[in-house]
Image (cartoon, rainbow, N blue to C red; front, top):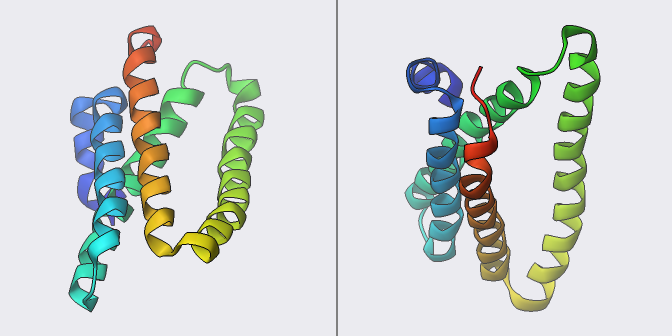
Length: 132
């Protein structure tokens, strides 16, 4: 849905400007999950976090692959998507253990913290990223 509804924003403003917004949306979506007690609240926070991911993932791929020569783009794309898959797999194991020990709230706080840490790192390195 994010790609269909907001794809024009990426085309208009560029991936570099959209990525911080996507990270904030995702982080806030996870933080809001802490207090959700209704189906509507779950749908709203899921929508917010999902929109963040839906904007971030293709933007990150575009920024990463654009400067790569055409004959190496498949390799880079494979490493990038494989890294995401590995992170989801390892994250599910780690978050499951944290949730078992401390409750669901720690899962959402940890996920939001990781997203906001990624935002901070992105904002620091953004001047080094060249839009082409």
